[in-house]
Length: 101
Image (cartoon, rainbow, N blue to C red):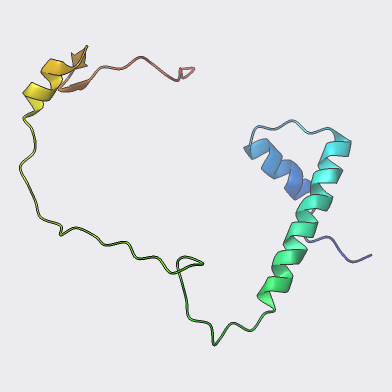
């Protein structure tokens, strides 16, 4: 069997960064799956694409853009007057994340 492209330690490190708790069996299964994906990507790296024109989309896209012309924006005080609550010159919103000190 060939040397794996990703080690079990690397899988566990990435799982820790993603805050995932993997059992030993799950970590080994994840290693096998990621190794398979990396093997497929290695095969793609071997393709000769020197004559292929670079693209951003797989199909031709025609996305006409408007001219980038600066226009005056609304007055901040008028916009904030419509908000349910404002604070320090901006919208006041409920706390989403709490950070432990």
